[in-house]
Length: 336
Image (cartoon, rainbow, N blue to C red):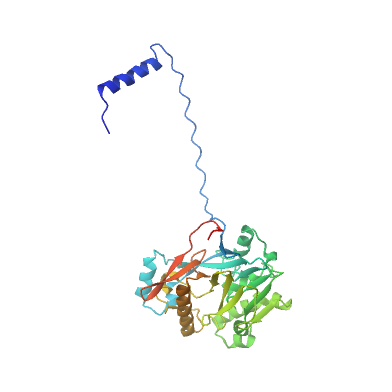
């Protein structure tokens, strides 16, 4: 900066003398405004929904809440490797690794379809917000005509019910793969299961009971027609009938893949890592590797129940494994 010259200082003083001649009385300065009291912090998050378009379909991601998972329930890599992969993504593992539970609402123009329903309050107060977020997103549970369950684990099916045990989606038909229904809804299979697994069978039966009684539970076989623009995708292993759903509108598609991934920091880089809840671990790994390869090759949009909310993005290859590329927040645009 150029330093002031004598001439510039003289001109500035002269201007002040003209503006404030000798004897002029200056108006008193206005009192300083009182400082506002600092309000309390707002410790709540924004409503848990995110919206995007897939062709002519409107896709709304819904946040049910979170559960903290112990990293020790992951296996297939050393404990040091798993810890390193978590640390690489700056993920805390105390009291557990925060893991989202997501569901997806798709307005196809002809149907209002919900993929998975969340947990209700089966696992505590940090979960069970699907109904609230459906309403926050501008819809009501009574408007949903189709529910597609990826499988019958409680964090996907328990949200079928209201707190009083009645149907939350009274106008919906509930679809689930027959292989999953035959397993989780069978009292005979449940009786042979380990004691610590039996509550999961009981919750599955309770979740679908009022829909079954109303004739609204429809187990399907691979290849069966569900709703226009939607096809089931076999992804067995996590459970006997675990399935994803491919929504296609025009040239664009999105695969809602359920529980292909529980730990984005670990399983993309190391697809061979399994979680304790996988019923058939070898088949779960095979399903994950196939879906990763297909999604990367096709540059397919995917949505996952346990990916960081909104859980929508792409899979790309990285070295011998894969990487997760999350969707970018933005408006729904008609030009792309």
